[in-house]
Image (cartoon, rainbow, N blue to C red; front, side, top):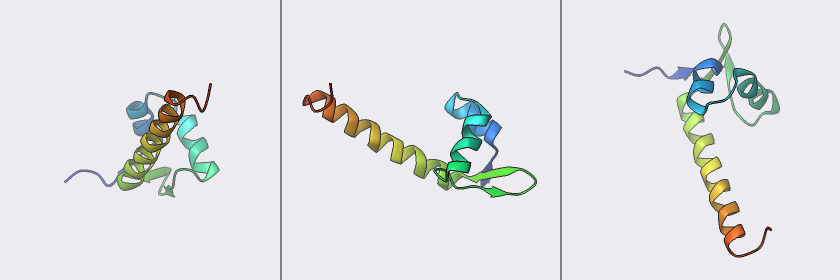
Length: 70
């Protein structure tokens, strides 16, 4: 069975960013996490955030294609 939680360092490797950026998302309330001997993010929260970002990126691309955003 896969781990249910991921650390900011592990998630930073997946997203190719810094662990500080992940912790910033947690502090801003954009990414939900719990403190269990350090920050831990549930995998379902990771998938939710990624899906949300995909929708946002698709909408921005659609707007650029129709000339809404230059």
